[in-house]
Length: 81
Image (cartoon, rainbow, N blue to C red; front, side):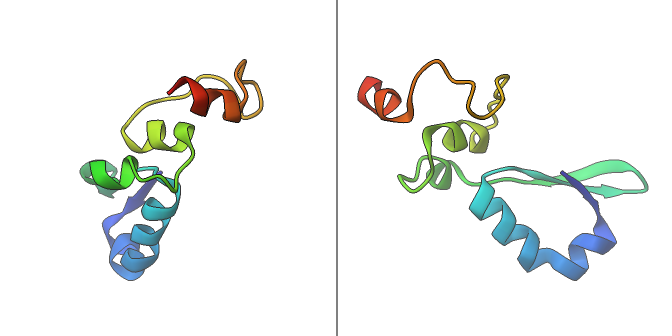
């Protein structure tokens, strides 16, 4: 997700809550160029409250399968950790 500096200035607390909740980084742009990026801290990314795939996204990983296309069930994934 990318937003302008002006939009970030007006909604910064909401943007930070969104990053905290989803684990997805936000790019901040000025005149169409990215000047900053806000993402979850490593500690937040490894927090036990996030599902494993959300932790992957929070650490900058990228999923190539759509939700529900996993070959491994969530309970099995936890067992393999």
